[in-house]
Amino acid sequence: MKIAYVGPFGFHPNKTMRVRAMGLAKPLVRQGHTVRLFMPPWQTPDEADKTWVEDGVEIRYTPIRGGTASIARQLIREVQAWQPDVVHTFKPKAYAGLAAWWVWYLGRGRVRLITDTDDWEGWGGWNELAPYTWGQKHFFAWQEQWGMTHHHGLTVASRALETIAWSMGIPPEKVIYLPNGSLLGDDITGAAARRAQFGLTHHPTILLYSRLFEFDTGHLVTILQKVHQQIPQVKVLAVGAGLYDKDTESFHQQMAAAGLQNCLVDAGWIPEEELPEVLTCGDVGLYLMHDTLLNRTKCSLKLADMLHLGIPVVGETVGQVSEYIRHGFTGFLYASGDADGLADGVVRLLRDEPLRQQFAAAGRIHLDTYFNYPTLANQLIGLYTG
Image (cartoon, rainbow, N blue to C red; front, side, top):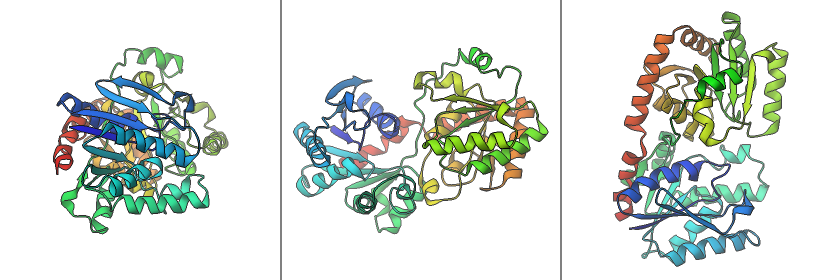
């Protein structure tokens, strides 16, 4: 079977295609199918018109000459020329959404169309957060509604998206719940050296692996203050960069105002191959999610990475978080906004190494059992063949 995976943009900086699409594609290739990823890399234009192979999966960065119509036309033309049996579009918006429209109206009956959604893009979702123009917001909202109702099958990354799909009248048998797993390696031989480099060797450490847009940073600082009051030697290792510079600046200012600036170690953006040894410098992960439509519908790759690496996590019970963190088994869960509970959970784990080890082992097993890509990919065969 020839399967075209089509994304709205390239591998960087977004991880939908790098992790989600590749995670599903690789086991399908091992089963004997041919999978090619088509993407216009408009965020990294120097890589346009490039083709390569990773783990048997063909990856094609289409040309990005001209405006939106020209880029979409080139993407659609290349997908059409490849003559796939199935087109699986990832995100029902932008270029992937335009490709889905072409498949549905011009390739219907000859090509099977599957749509994937892993976020809420329209009103109440990314439209409220991203700096889109008025026209883009209305177009993306329309694309999302159209894409979720015009297909031969729908894959969703969260239970909330599954429920939304059912509310649109999509038959349950056409909707497959496909949460995210982790594709990170597990080489942490350099972790001890990294801890020394960051000055963490003799400090209990909270891992903050976030882009800072899922919650109010003031809420985060309040939790850290409460932890610091009980464990004055605590450090906070921040990995990654804020989605927007203003969020990072605000967080640093709030930490300084709270007298916690000396607790913060900002590792910044870390290359993917170095992430395991850096992330495991943290003793306990803190994963915050305010209760919004966007947060309820998303499925965090970062949370999957932390469980994969055996990092016990304290989180808020919003959306998919409770699917990954099982309270008292792989970590601790508290209601969104419960700063006292979250701080107490972090303190308890920082003080109890045997419990951390117990949660770490259970977290790895939980992730490998319910969120491994080969098992998830097997569910796609019936959807692809109809």
